[in-house]
Amino acid sequence: MRKWISISCPLAITFILISFGFKNKPVLVPDSLKVNKPTLVSFPQNETFNAKFLLTPPYVGSSYIGFKEALAFKESRGRYGIINSLGYLGKYQFGASTLELVGIYNVDRFLSNPELQEEAFMKNIARNKWILRKDIERFSGIKIGNSNVTESGIIAAAHLAGPGNVKKYLRSYGAYDVFDDYGTNIARYINLFSGYDISIIKPQRNARILK
Image (cartoon, rainbow, N blue to C red):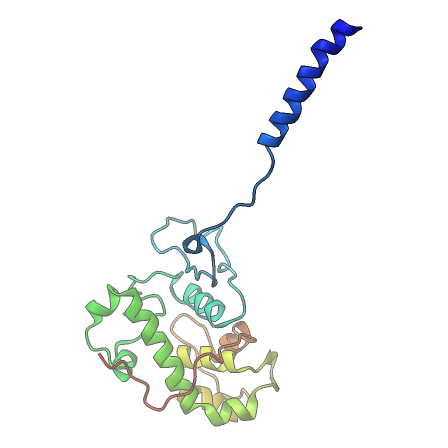
């Protein structure tokens, strides 16, 4: 019995001392590694994908980011460097004349500069919001055909067909509609892009890139 005690007591003391050595300690995360704001992720530009299986855009919310990425996916699958068969350019498929309205005259620079494309998209939204400000106020919240009219749907349709045609569509309550060369119409875009919050972009008269 004494022999067992003489062996077990040192082992117990050793175990207790070792357990203190493994006591949890608070871990401090350096400020440089802390996430203080959301990280914005765009659809990958250089990734090879199979269009047969990629049918919907990556969902990144219903804010301005979600709106622009969903529209970009519909226009170009989110590719900055693309020119389509009709000559429309970049991630958001701008025509050269629309680019000139927002202050861009060098299409090669535009195609090679993702930051410039994003700025052009924002300026064009601000410009269209100004042109359509009365119609946005008047028609938002009503239903035309099968579509609930919202500000984001109106702005998406203006990107497709121009603000003048969208005015005619709204003021005719859908009787006047136009289709692009691929068969997409104003009603489709108003419905498809309904319900996004794009209030972060403010209406601006003659919005242009000043550089």
